Image (cartoon, rainbow, N blue to C red):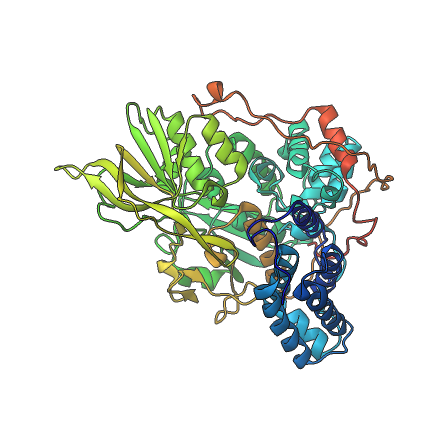
Length: 610
């Protein structure tokens, strides 16, 4: 008979809670590239040390799982061992009396699903996968693989121009990313093991605040190759590709259908988050290479046919983005007063500020676009602004800082409410938004789902509805060029080349769907390298930086410096920038927190750069 616990399975005791918190902290600080099986084995050893020993599944089962996993890690096991381990974990998950047992088994089962290729490599070839190896966490998690430790060191030495050029080796938008990057680099910062991650984005902002990017000379171009590349779309991905190709010595022509370059950086992100004069500093620096020609107000294929481009250019890069907003297809969705949040932000980016004086505005969605739209509506003098989201606030995909900023400025959140219909009057004008209360439900794909609550629908009175439920790729004009009809995205090989057109390449949101700016920049950088290889070259960017000698780690526990905002009472009345920068003392303190993982414990940065 199994030991009968004195508390229910849902009541974790304090010891269990502390153990799981410590493990989550350890995994969060674990550098990418480490063999996931070895990490899992370490977890199992920790779990066994915490078990009380009264429950057979914990006491004996976890020991057997650990032994099986060690044999797999050492290349001494076959598929039968893996199958036995999975079956045993299911038994432990179903029969263990506390979280030490059933959570440990569940995490092992998740690891088998997530890292199946790694398990099979150990079983079939007795080695880790080729990509497994010690990597620098912040560099690895940055989609553009910026050399973060070195530019932090340069800031610490007061060499701000060199820091900007260090960033430009991998990302030609240091200023834009200083304002709006979602900083995935901080997710695995190993400083988090000691106290808190280094404020990497804040340090980048400090650097570009000391000297504007367009005042820092870009590297010299390589010798002209005589090759000519067309870039269709002047957003972050297209301009990144154009920048690196121009430095390689190629001639680049950028076709942009709007009046100015920048894409969603200019027409999708409000000025209070990214001032357009600061964006222009990055664009001016990119164009200063001298090998880039820009043709604005030119649409492909409406103004220039693809046949002409194919005839005149040696390679073509599609970077048309995902600039069309979606609407929730509910009754009344096409009523007078229902707009796409993306379209409204686009108009604001063009300088056409709507007047919402006396209006009640509802924003549907929970991402950054929803927060941008709601905070913009406040600045357009709306009487009240409400964000309606079908999940919980903690499930919103928007940055927590953006959600907090919206709440401070007076935006109301109505979570756990799903769209049902737009209420209209006899003139088909919006008078309310009908929603169905939701209840949080079972987990699926790592997060809880929602289902309809057994409650009646409710109507929230409003005059304007802004739909912020996603973006679409307008790729119909290029349907014959490997466009996936269902997703409307370009279908590419890993080399970013279209599968049936050898000199056509694509990247950014039009390939992987709406995502972050830094991911689009990373895609543009990769595309530049691939296009250069396709043209028969293997260029390196000219110029070098004399990096500081790494200093000894400062392991004093220090709090994280957070960037502050201007008073909500003041900032919500204009589109002026809301975020304050770091002081000199704050920046120097954050620089000292960097543990220099590129030199201590993770190996040295090699390769991965243009």
